[in-house]
Image 1: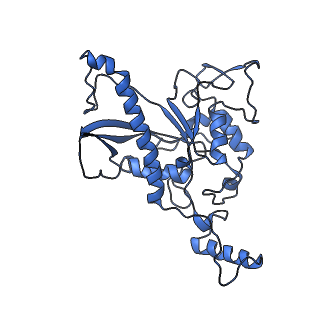
Image 2: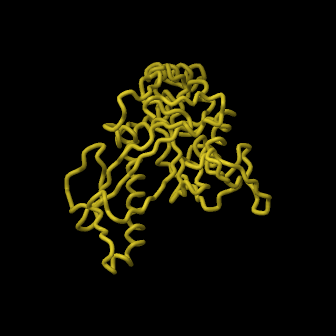
Image 3: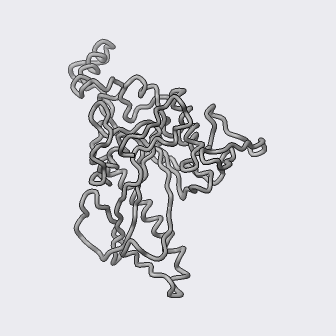
Length: 310
């Protein structure tokens, strides 16, 4: 999830509106950039692809976390002297632009549109926010009885999940194509079974993907993908939703496999499919980390005691 924004600090609903990062949000993004399990600049992890929402608060956070710019918004020229620092594991990382990272801006990762509540306190209901908007329009002489007031788009969970699963499906298809291509030579030699019908193939290739997004969309994806795997004691927000702190990291393993063509849809949370010829590319999900904040421990002001579910 992106770093803390002024709207987060003031308990304001953002949705697909936007807000600048706070100093704290920027600082913690900088701390996250030192984590060898996140930044993509150490041997611990090298990303196949990196993505961010097109909203500013996410895009700025992603650039800092991935080392594409520093906390001051500066990028280093190719000729500028590089500085080397150590991550929390004692490994050296170079404090400069990671030329191996191509950050893809993808609007499918943007936050859910929250409708009339956008820009108002989270304590306001839908109806109360609509009333506030109407009153503001009247006071601003922008409202007449025969006109409609303009309100931000309201998006359903189903619509949001639709664009999220479209993004996931495109990744699975591209990774599958790349995998099949990478082992085609060995397949011709008869050394490798590429049917991918089981979880214990003798050959496995991992495609690590980084995605910087927003709480409501991430929460939607978690519930749709691995709801049955969530611990019973996961932390909740004041509104009763799954708590996803700013800059928390959730990791989900997406494992593709092929089956014979099936016409019926898959069960929610069990995976999805893409029909291709006589076979169906399907995938299933496994929760690895939920709302992990252990990488923020470099900041002494943060309570780093992990909740029981982490």
